[in-house]
Length: 502
Image (cartoon, rainbow, N blue to C red; front, side):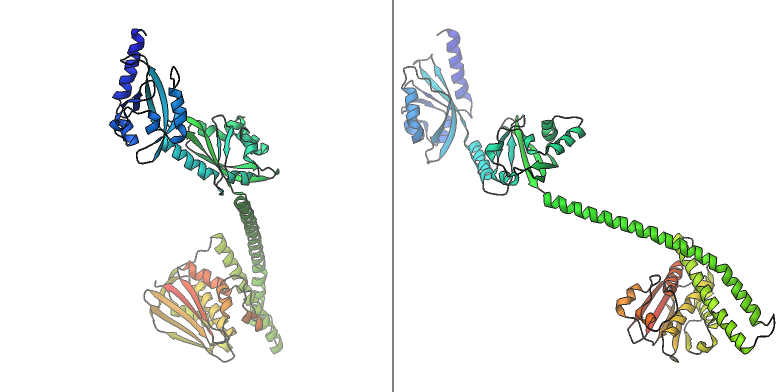
């Protein structure tokens, strides 16, 4: 051999023995160990003096590999091929070593064999663990592909999910798993992308992981919705070797979500329709209220003329009739005013004209507006003469009149109604109490709703539209106050109004 060949053999030997982490040993042409490197000692657990001089297969090689290794060295020109051989360490453990061999033609004994190895044990254990997990009879669904998208592995969980055998899928493009219509739509969305690019492209071009819903085609032709996570697979030096697909069947979840969204949309449409109806109702009420105002004003004007005998003296029977007309017209006028007030509240245009006013004076004015025959049933207790609030006096008079009227209406004949004015902290409190029939507890939460009439009102055939307490709540809220009701059926009712001191 020429000088260059010898130099090459010497360099290879020097490199193998000089590397601290190199797994290397040197044998003669018959396989007897001449040199045993320090890394070989560390991996095998044998000292060099325990191995040197012995055939390599008798000390280190696993029993099932010994004949093959011995046969490789028995040739006239031994050229052991690169091969993975299991070593058995001194303590009985097995290590998988990938050996590369080189025959050295220089030196004192031409034909020596330099063996350099790579320990694959941990890598193979990891591969075996992954294979065990993927092959396990579990619900985990995994599909691996090569770099061009051809399927290389299908786990049992994926077979069950897709209703297709691994043998049917391996070697096929991963796009064969997809519903053609769904895949075509995704390709169009990406600008006429290739189907494989639509499935794997984002991860191929650097995205660490992509997850999206796909329609996958089962073996029986049915479709399932799967949330598919695509991840890259790399080898030990970082090169991409393929893709790992992890599909999860979310068909039931997505169907339930669609039903929920449809129900929510239906609810939204119903709410919108109710809002439209409510606006139409409010517009109608406002229009009718305005239209009733003028004729009611005329009616009340004429009843005043008649009752004042300006067109002639009325007989007792005639005066009784006119009194009834006047009383009912005024009641209707109050209801029209209530409707108009609530329309203003809805439109945000209700603004009370507020100024300092004594709550005791408001109560007195309200009682003066009651019919003479019921005033004596109302007892008034004023515990704070300086009961000043910042309020719209006419509106507050209407509140007191309405509450007292309700208390009288739902109390037994001759039973008194108590009206109390007092101060509590920074609030002025108006309290109206009756000992009447009370309000069923189940209905109390609806008392401030418009047009609501409790069972008690229907039982006694009390007149009204069910607006009284709604108006009270609106007026008091506009005065920065609040209203509460306490009632027990058969034991009376107490209404408490709180207003900030003016």
